[in-house]
Image 1 (tube, rainbow, N blue to C red):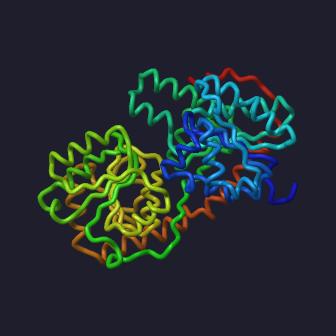
Image 2: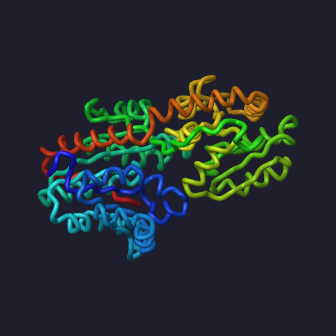
Image 3: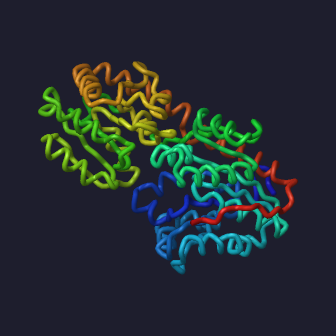
Length: 408
């Protein structure tokens, strides 16, 4: 194996229920695949374990055609339309068969939800005599988010914690996107410090930062899910205030179960709001490069990709001082943090609109800081190192059958 190679194969286990087609339809595929495209020289084969049907094959052929030819990208999907449990049970043997000519493999989760499949794939490969390293990667703390939504004593929260524990304790390396997330995981599951790493989400924006005079006038942008946790209602109420309703337009890009309620709220308040479905990633970056202000009022985030991307695009960013958002903003330098109320957001938006030089300074500082720390080249180096360490740590492990919960 050449010095640049990490292993024969990389297996990426998608989040439970997530498909390649879903990534394509939501505009995420190009963005999410950017890291793995850079990993192609380090593997002979990349295997995607997804939950979609045969339409995933069409997405693979349509979007990743060149990478299929370069890296032997292969797909294991739910082509028979089986229930989730049945498909999850079939995945390990299918991966082993596909990788019968490989001796070294790195297995990685895209998120921790559904990570038990990655553990079972790892055990099956080890039973077949392969050297395997398992990376339990999460972009957000799954158990914390489930607890937030369902309550700490709910069955859903207890189940998420149990599954998360099984994955993290089985993994050779545990990767989170923030110090807070990794520290929490290490504390919860008594992980060895050498077993954990922080690898942040990356940003792709690298063009010229557009100053205020080249941006749309008085356009506030939000992009993301339309769910209760995101508190998009705060933004709608802010722009509906007397001082802003005739001066700005709030552009909301995203979908979710809260959309009907949010549309009704905007109608009731007479708020200047424009709703739009999800857009391809490149188009989203263009919106971020042209908006006046990017705003997000979420109550809880992990390592918020859209906020980081807006910062990298040079947008003045305004966020709620809530967990996950507050940590990425140096208040008054790379953006603004305010209390999660409509009044606070309205006041901050009004102040920003009145000072173009301030907006330009915030945007330029944010772009410089975020691109330096979270640019793809930086994150790629950290990613490669974790893959090598995981394989090294997994090299001495024999196959063990772990008491895993099956995917529901």
